[in-house]
View 1: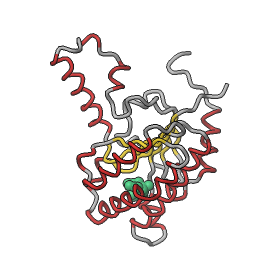
View 2: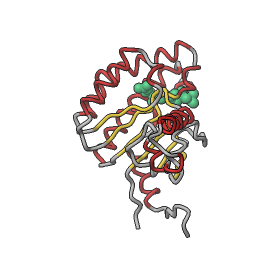
View 3: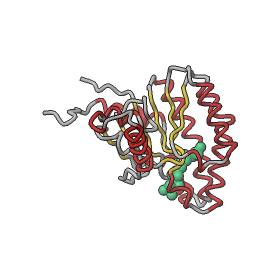
View 4: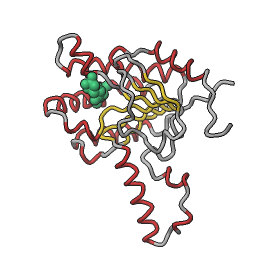
Length: 233
Ligand code: FPP
């Protein structure tokens, strides 16, 4: 029996090492990494994947040196203004998750515009995690629940897992079936902690700039050969 694969989440890691190996500045790795992101998003849309969530910038990434953060933000600006159009034209709905208030005003405005413009699309949902941290997301959801209780519109015993899940940024999305991390690191790094309770994991040594649609297809084939039991026997 093949597994139903609706949602793939990816931790795009290894841009810096890719550049270092070539004697290039880390930013060259991010530039190539953004090209890979574009290829993989297009491939996912063409393959009929319903949800693809990409970790583009974590809350911890703000602590990198200013030059690298500025470079990533400019890459993001460019990506939002031009490249995303190609994915949008493939019928994708684009959604962003994360702590928006930390981002520059022009970036936030572009994000809202794209979300609005693509809200009615129904092929791939491309979810980009930007300034994202999963613990902060869970705390924000807990605050929402607490506020409802304080207002008297929710009894504590009425709070279910489904309801709590709906308070997360990923609200109406299904949980990831498969999480892929590139670059050989075997960590979760504060990514979708609630949502990955029953996900399958795949760690590949490939550095993100070298990741390809072909490797994605191989990983999906591996996923399809696994037996998922969700805790049952
Ligand atoms: C990890 O590589 C990657 C990131 C911190 C960001 C991911 C960014 C992209 C794929 C480029 C596109 C980005 C935007 C915002 C559109 P790393 O720098 O941690 O690599 P290392 O672990 O080898 O140092």
